[in-house]
Amino acid sequence: MYILDKNIKKPLYIQLYDAMKYEILKTLPLGSKLPSIRKIATEYAISKNTVELAYKQLYTEGYIESRPKSGYFVAEVLLEHDAPTKTLCETKPYTPLPIRYDFVPARLTHESFPLKLWKRLFIKAMEGDLDFGAYGDRQGEIGLRKEIAKYLIKSRGVNCDASQIIICGGFADSMNLLATILKTKYTHIAIEHPGFPIVRSLFHDYGFITVPINIDPNGLVIDELESSSAKLVYITPSHQFPTGVSMPVSNRIRLLNWSKRVEGIIIEDDYDSELRYQNRPIPSLQGLDNDDRVVYVGTFSKSLSPALRVSYLILPHRYFEAYRGLFHSRHQRCSVSLSTQKTLEHFMAGGHWERHLRKIRTLNRKKHDMMKESLQKAFGSMIEITSEGGGLAILIRPTINIDLAILRQNALTQGVKIYLASDYYGKDWEAIRMGFGGLEEKEIRKGIILLKSIWMETVTHP
Image (cartoon, rainbow, N blue to C red; front, side, top):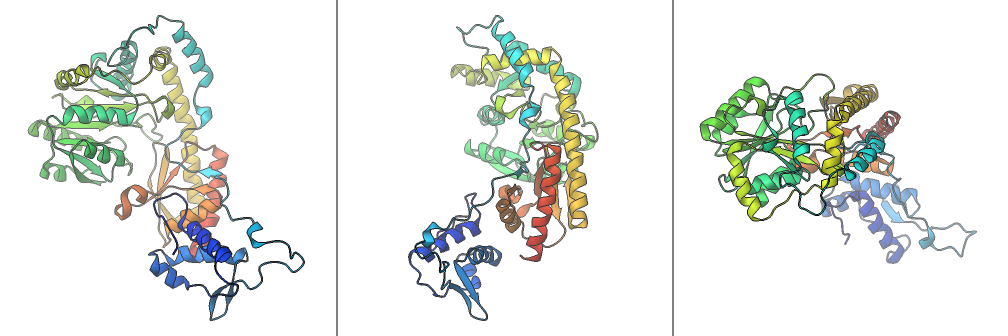
């Protein structure tokens, strides 16, 4: 009985290979027949391709042998005759290559962070008038909130002032705060499908009933939302996650009219609006709101650093009384350190943030274009590009029949790591999420060339 776990990162065929090798070493007599590929695939509910890969590796390393029209058997002769003292256990086990090309879809390179400048501004902040003997502002330091407000008004058309901004410790912290406030009035939340998985699970943990609303080429399907029982909706209108589509202004107006009619709230997540390479993003939905119905959510993770854990909310005025009542009574404080807030304030006030954005856009535009060109050159008509032009990844789908799970397993053995949308969405929505932000340009080119060879071997020998 082999123990195979589909929920761990180790590929299934490697798990099967390890289990069968252990059995060969410990219990099976030399020359004994092994179960057929079909039998193991059926018994363990795995694909024949997975079993074939495990058998192929065992055969390559000499643990088993193939006999025409008879099947596979434990090898009769496992060692060379001139090495009688060596045991089979001394054979070096098979291990995948270290990851050389990681196409993670949401990462920046280490070099993209302005470390020297950050150190200098950090020292400047420490030498300033910081009071480490007192608690900081519950909403976050007023200086940083003013800088964020100035930036958003100018770049995203957001209608706000510093008094509406709440500094949070990353996206999940922002959502936790919102769920706590909104659960006193709402029981259902509409969420894009496909959409950001953490939102669904987080609001579910707070007792909300999540209502999936489909995505079409214009973003959230407004007709479905209007027919649902939800009065609260989470959307990514400027660059929908994960499909990449944008909601046109006409649909944004419909959505705002819906929120006013049902007395609802819209959570607008503008998670990567700074990273657009082909055209400027449509101004924020919040900036079109005349009825105080939109919560605007932003972050510094995609353009500056996810390690800083700095995000922010712009809360409608109507919810500040609820915010103060809930969080002040619990002595809730801003979870971002005072030193990080003040350093970021200096970074923005000195004009470094906008200069950094220009640099990071230029850098990632080159990587984006390099990846697109490399994908098209390597795969041609074998793929279609389903999302491009923004963020830190390009999404592709095969136009030929290929098992993507097997492709990923094969790629790992060669040191290439790819990411599948089905990890989050199952069979409902599939794509390969090819991230470029964490790679250098030459790595992108070499990684795709290697992936192409693995792809062709997987197609030819499934």
